[in-house]
Image (cartoon, rainbow, N blue to C red; front, side, top):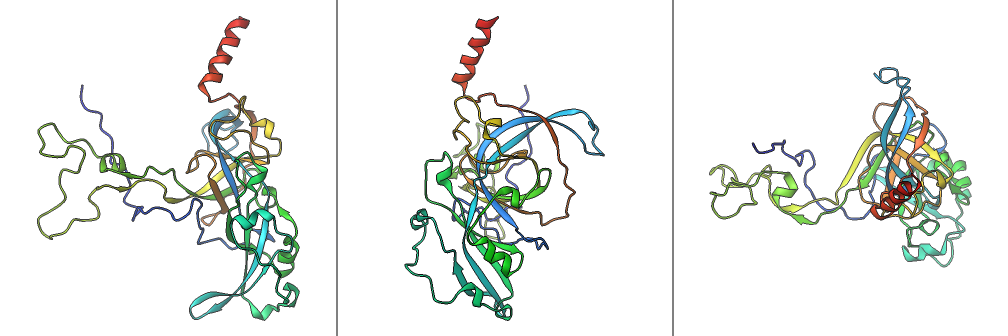
Length: 336
């Protein structure tokens, strides 16, 4: 039989392939909105399943029919404000001119940062509009409310779609996923991919093994390039870091934002995660990263798409653990 052939993997669009600094992404660009809401949120990746819904897309060949699609479950516990930052435009870019911490911070934050003993005398009510140009907020997660088994929160920064009065109102309350996104809306997803460490060019770029008559190495590139110029081009597939990269996916559809975890929890718990305890999101398709990793969501920065609320008919709760699948098969066989 002939050899199975496939195109070259490892797109050169992503370069350099360096390792991410943290286990969750730092978002550098946000879209500007006129609503008084935070422009981002965060949740923990749970795993994947599949759902069936009525396709209501006008241009779809399956319009009006029930279709089955893979989805990713994201657990979304509420997040809280750590601080409000005020930025001023200078000739060197935006600079922080003032920052005010929230009054009642969780004690678990001391695992992440050093908390001040006393707040400064200046209050957020004293700041004037001419002293700043932009307002950002630092948010922190609450992993202790999940089944992750950790208490140390993550802290990330997002802009605020609102004025100073709205920032003041957020200091002492939690933010829910429903305050930012709706069913059928689109979002941009920022995450860190699954890491594979230091790998060779066969696994990293998908090149073929060399023939049995080749000299020396078998799992390496056959040619490093021309004799002149006397250097190796960066386009030549070579060994290096594979995975654990920051990646962004645009315009991902939110099929559902649910409040009842029992709608997605599987018998014996979801594989490599456990049980969902908080509100959750169902994202159409896959999401980068392994289970339990923090995923950052933001409002879409590309062309806006209209919301498409879906009529979900079925959410699969079948266990993905082989031992439980075998037990369920035995139970079905015994009932026959």
